[in-house]
Length: 284
Length: 296
Image 1: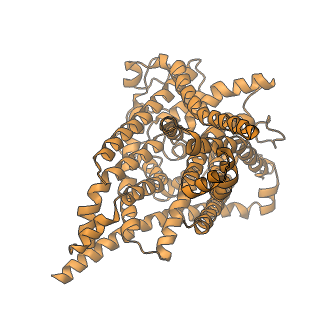
Image 2: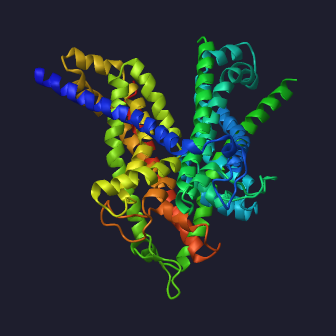
Image 3: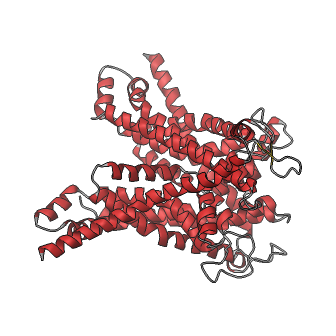
């Protein structure tokens, strides 16, 4: 009896250590980035153009703007498609072969490696549709990558609306679309959007696909059209860390990583706060 | 009046169902583009040479060679190594979160795990490159810490959130009766977890592991930065490796489109696609059986 109790204490503390390993890992990552790259963060670093000849002279403004433009492009492409697909699957779809095939492809798309999306984007958007390596090709490629995440998040939000909301409306004689428009979407749209934005924040860190379809390390102007190449934070830090000769390259890579992480975590944080507020408002 | 209303309803439904076909088209599109480009490689390379030879030498003047075996073994090393780290850590964390932790501890750990999932792989790769690989080199007395072990640790950390969150969902969703019945029979909490909850959650845990493997197979940036990228056949975890994903990322920028080299890289992409497709399918089937078996 005592023996089994001691065993339990040992196992449970091991499990606790495993769980807190993640906490430690996250704290370590943040501290490492702040200590290693914090010194390069300055107004100049964040707001001036990249100077190719001397990396200490310029800033990463074009990479920040490139990443934000990419995030915008991806949102425009994948959020409407994702939300409409989720509405279809959750509100209209019957349990038939068509629905099962759509659901199977969503689950599989979620598992396809991002580099494979890159190959697809290169063959289809860049070469076949002749969009070239460009902002639009990268947005379309990452739009495909994020689609399954956005659909899954949106479906969850739709599922959280109680069935009685729909039944009440239908019983009053409203049509299906009227029911969705007036009784389902108002309660789920904010959840769908916050879930989608989380997906977009993940896309902002994707590196492998954009190497092939549009990101470039150096551009002496900001992109002026969707057919321009663009600089992006993750690709920028990758090149700085692995292929740049300057002795400061690694410090600047860490600084760039810090900016990228800050951007992503800020988006996540605002979503957490928004969700908390939404949840507090809900009364069912 | 009634008719036009019906028409409107019908067209709205048709609109939503047509939009949802896009997902299917993307899925088919990816397969078709990888297939038609990748298959062309086999007009110049035999299947046997491609899959079973371990010499990859696209730029040789005499006779280029296209064997991907050492890349495949590289991927295998990283998958095995990362799972050896992520499965025990992930399962233990999931048990802690779902069964042992106080609600307050849970409120700290769960968002932390979501935040780890949000760290881009290129950032973890950077930390692997600047911090972990020198550390590994020092500990084991190696000339370079860029090897399969370092890559496994980084990829293991990346696969953790996937494994933890699915295992935790599965364990939490087990009915309360299971725990109560076992505790009422005098079992300790640990005995309840080990003998009642774990067997019931086993298939869900297997599904989580499959998805973790899928992530490890497809991971690109982190392995590109820390695995060492040597095209030689690895013999131990201290050897540098070049997994399949890394080889595509390294070479795709320099190839001439339509060349055998380009086609071969697509063929590697096709192999990756098929592996992740199968891994997902298996995990789907496991989950399906799990929910059918325990329909509480």
